[in-house]
Length: 136
Image (cartoon, rainbow, N blue to C red):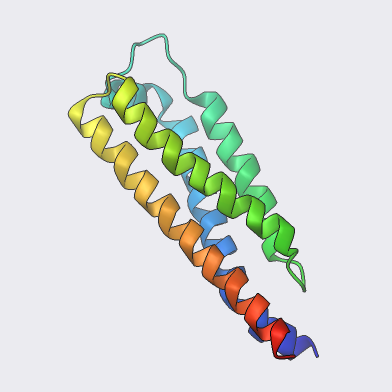
């Protein structure tokens, strides 16, 4: 039974762990290079990205915790998909509204595309679990 659950949840587990690693590393990088990143993005000197960095680390921990369960909570996985989708929509909105540098716009867009890839990967993992439950 454990092997069966592992097979059904494997794709989603890998997606959540990948997302957790990317989010955690991004959060740590933001905290370590806060001032440099603010300047690179073309934001005013008074801006700090520390809250974003800490939030990403907390998000990574939640994703990691869910991914490490023997049986992943699908509701929690859907929350991750929705939050990633909100990140993507928010990123593109910010590109239109915030006066980022040209390089900053590209970085924000690239990160948004990576987050979108994680959302799709997680959705595919959820879909695989749902399909396997239909035939079980």
